[in-house]
Image (tube, rainbow, N blue to C red; front, side):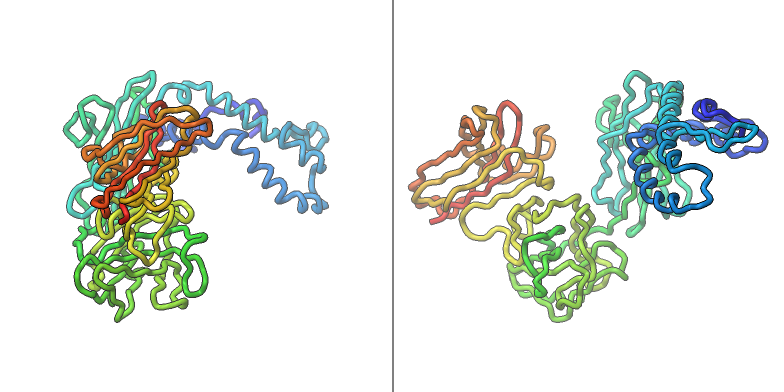
Length: 512
């Protein structure tokens, strides 16, 4: 090529545009290619520059590769450079060889990366404002075969003007993308007109279809952003779920990362799924299926003769180890999130479906009430037992079990003829906190910015203002002495006044 190191560092990102020997980049950057040409090219180039072309990212990768090959380089008897050059050339230019031409310069990797990055960031194509895309929602969740899918996103440009926003989708994944315009006009499920929330619609798709999609937003000048950043190469996707036809047996609780909880027959800590029979009759589940995808070939058939008692539970180990026993499914649960399906014996009718996100170790996800109620998390899983059983305390949290910032625990047995005691922790020392007791639970996202409200404010019984001590904790003890309260349930949650920090929920059922 004959270029100096400086020329290479300052090579234009449109180099060879218009050259007859390079038709691809010429066609790609030509105005006739539209926004998916030049605008997309610079958006991807900019994403690469901002996320990868940085010595903070590339340096450790170079070090790892250098260490990988160092012994082989040392042993190479025909190499054209010294080991000193092998090491120096990472951080500085070196001259290799000699002769009439004086040898050639091998540019140092770090200075090349740093100087090329500085040059590119100085170009207007990589420094002008471009859109930001956030707050993405796909509705309904999960997408079903009975309605179109609405994709919502918050899109804005700081210091610039938004030109347009587009939704690209395809089904099947091997097909071409279809382009849909996204709107902020209040007419496409996007909230109020001009509020920055854009909506785009993917038309009705058949059950089982796998739809891939991505978003592209551009300024009036063409500066663009993809979500996800790799756009069509690594798009978002969803599987279209058939309608759920509820039956008496439901998925009741599951644990996707079991490190120290319930053990199976082999003495191993395995993932598990618990089913619940909400009917008044014993039911034969033989021939029904559990699965983590709709593919019939991957569904696990519940063994013939497997029954579940009325109001009872059935525990299935999701360990992909059927040799350990009859109730060991042929799939595992993904702790990073996936779905669980309960499918009828016809292999088609979905009786229950649970989609879940990233899970925590030894924290289960289950229904607050057996067979019903909102989905919550349990720091004390109840494998092969009812979720709500008897009197006493029962802690439950939001689906993100790491979200609560305050601790809330019940002390001793809450007797209707004795006392009730709870302890709050994690409060700012000397801070004020309100403990709220309601007659019903709830699962309210978005009511407070700091977390999920787990009690129903409309059924408020009492609120107790408390002040934390120097250790950031406070205990409240109340006399009860009212036998008629036996069996009554209250739901407690604490809120710190100054910070808005929330506790998990705590169910109190008075014991006789």
